[in-house]
Image (cartoon, rainbow, N blue to C red; front, side, top):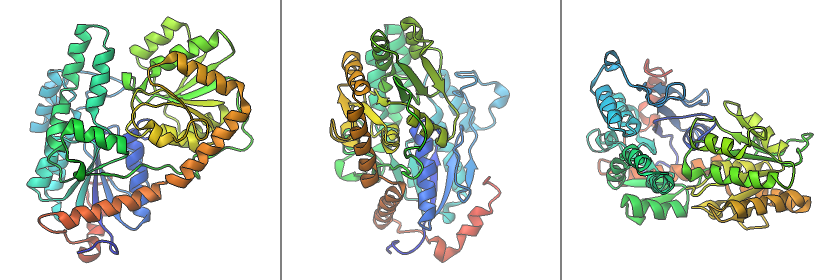
Amino acid sequence: MTTAHRPLRIAMLAYRGKPHVGGQGVYVRHLAKALTDLGHYVEVFGGPPYPELDERVPLTKLPSLQLYNDAFPMRKPRLWELNDVTDVLEAASFSTGNFSEPMAFSWRAYQALRDRVDEFDLVHDNQTLGWGLLAIQNQLKLPVLATIHHPITVDRRLELEHAPNLWKQFGKRRWYSFTKMQTQVAKRMRRVMCVSENSKIDISRDHEVPLDRIHVVPVGVDPELFKPVPGVERVPGKLVTTASADVAMKGLSYLLEAVAKLRTERDVSLTIIGRPKEGQSLDKLRELGLEDVVEWVSGVPDQRIVELYSEAEVAVVPSLYEGFSLPAIEAMATGICLVATTGGALPEVTGTHGETCLQVPPGDSEALARQIGEALDNPTLRERVGKGGRQRVIDKWSWLHTARATVEEYEALLADHPSGAHATAAESGAHATAAESGDTV
């Protein structure tokens, strides 16, 4: 039965959902809203930090042991906190040095859906890829669409390459051991959705998923929110970047090295949208003596992020690899000149050098400094690239387009599902049942 003209009931899984920094929370928030705008029912099952959602989108909170929260990272759980088997599994996996959050969340999602199977037509997982997802697909018989933004195996390789010693390498290997689970789960998913052609190839290679089972649906941006702000003057020499995580893949250390070089030639400052953490980047910042020219901004709403882009002369994405890069298209949408590397899918996203962006090789702080310096010295170039970048985003990416393409993936998933499509909301009247459930908040 086709779903083209009837609403679907979607259980969307998000094992963590930081609302403003980090692609997962942003993806869930905007896609859920856009799907709702199209008339579908979306309920998000989320782990902490919980996503911020449109008021029409209910959130079922699935609390965890919060072993990786910003306030007390890597804390040891107390015995009295272990209330069920999943808590014990999470704590046991954590004790080995493994990132246990995706595995534990997937089992909590399975438990939450076990008694609500008839309320949903399908499950849309956002990069959890835990064992519980196989139980949802194979035991509960719910169709599952798995979004993989990029394989975390890439993060693992880059972290190991940049680890300063064997002890650090050992710790990284333990931490990323969860990627073995993700590979086993991914290759058993009946349908996978990713965000770029580059990511599709990497997922097939690293997670052993056949290419014909992976379908590309790029993410979007709201060009009416991320747009130039009239009346805001750009600060000479001001740069802005987003650092959702202090990991090698994001390339922040190379940007800091570039800023240090530029500082010997001119007045320059850098705003980093993200939360500073003790470790690699802060150590690098202090080593380079950049404390007085680098500002960290976190926990601010989207409008303030737009203003930060409008205040700067150049935005920078220094990543060694990206499966897509929401920060890139958000920056481009505001009309700022973007300097980005050619890591991963970034060329696919940012377009043509000199027209919609300025491109440099990844992992090359000298080239990054030269290109940023050229942009700072040439206002005509900045204006041309800024306008071209915004037009590229308007022409290619919106959350409404993402939602429509995602619905096509839902339809294909349901058409191919061996047990057939579940009764829809229009047929069962389950919208009200799910919305009024005591499990939602």
